[in-house]
Length: 509
Image 1 (cartoon, rainbow, N blue to C red):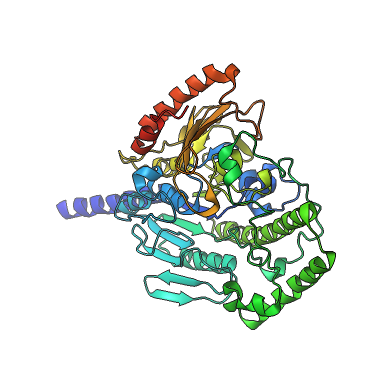
Image 2: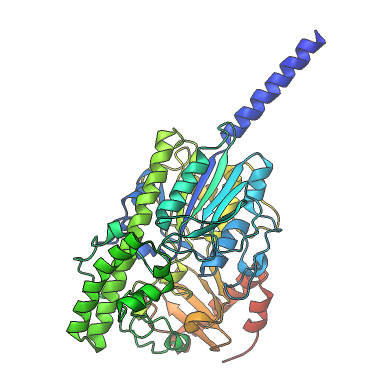
C-alpha cells in the first residue's frame, strides 16, 4: 500500500511540474538595430510599409513612450539582458567597454526554472556568452551578405542575406526544443544598421516614393553648442561610397569590404542596381542643397529597402508561432536598440537624448494579458523589460536589477509607470557627440553635457517638440530649471550614478 501511495505522489508531482512549466510563457524578443519609430507604419509613417511589425501592434500593444537609458547598440543590449543601467552593468560604450557575462542576467534566472534559452544574430557584447543553452551570433556588427557566425562549435560563414539567415537559424532552433519546457529566444537583427544594404529582391520598393524633407533638416543648432559640433550630418558626414554605394569606379566598389565577401550573383545584382544611379548622379552635377537632399532621398530608399527584408522575416517568425499553435502562450516583443535620425536636424545615427534617438519603437503581443490593438502611453525604459519578463515567468526580481516591471500597465493601460526618465550617454568618440546625462518629465527635458562640451540644455517640449530652442538661460524658465535639477539629482541618486553626481556638482554656470 505504501508503494502505491509513493508512486501516486511521484506521478502527481511530475504532472504538477509539467503543468507548472507549461504555465510559464514562452518568450521571443526581436531586437533590431537602429530602426526608427518614424519608419514604422504602426507609428504613423506615411511611407514605410511594415505589415508584420504592425501585426504585433494589431494583435497586441504599441508603446508610445518607450525609451532607452543609453542610445547606442551594445549598451542597449547589455541593459536588456541585465535590467541595469550602463554604469551598473559595466558596458557604457562600444569603444572601451567589455561585457561581463558572469553577472546576473534575466536569461540565467529563466534557466534556473527550466527555460531553454537562445540568442541568434547580432548581440555585439563579445563572444563568451553565458545564460544561453544555444547561441549562434554575428561576429561584431555582422555583415549583410555571407556573414560569419560564432556558436559553441566555433566560427563559420553562412551564404546568403543576413535577415534571412538569422530567421532561419532561429526557427531551426525552435524546431529542436522539448515542448514540455518553456523557451526564451532573442533574435538580434543586423538591419537597419549602417551601411543599409538591402536584399536585392527589395531593390526598387521605395525608388518612386516622394519623401518630405524633415522640417528640421536645415537646423542651424543655435543655442545648442553640442549639436553644432557633431559629425553625423547627412550633408557633410554621410559618405557617398561607403554609405550610399556611389563609388567612382566599379573597381573601387568591388574593393570595398562589404562587396569583397559577396558571391558573383550578389555583386552582379548590386552593380546592375547602383551603377545606373551613380551615372545619373554624375551627369546631374548636383551641389549644395540639391546634393544634400539627393543624399537624404537615397538614404531613405536604402534604409527602407533594408527594413523591408527584416519585416518580411519577422512575419516568418509570427507565422511559425501560428503553425505550431504557440501564439496563446508566447510573449512576443519587438523593439529597436534605440531610435534613429531620418534626416531630423539634418542627421543620421543616434546617441542623443533628443527624442528621435532617446525614444525607441516597442510592440508586444501576449494574448492572455494584452487585448488586441492596445495603445500604452505610460513612460518606460528598456531596463524595465527584464523584470517584466521575470514577473510574467513567476520569478522574483533580483535585488540589484534597476528596472521596474510594467506588468501592472499591461493589466491596466491607464496606470502610470515612470514619472521621470533618466538617461546617460558615455561614449566620447565616433560622430563627435559629447557625453551627457539628463532627465525628462511630461513636459520638460534637462540635459547636462560634459567632456567635449560643458553646458546645460532645457527644452519645453510642449512649446518646442522638435527641441530647437534651448531655454536654459531664459529668465522665465529659472524656476523650471531649479525644479528639473532637483528631479535630475533624485534620478542620479536613485540609480546610484556616482560619475554623473560628481559632474552635476561642478558649477559651470
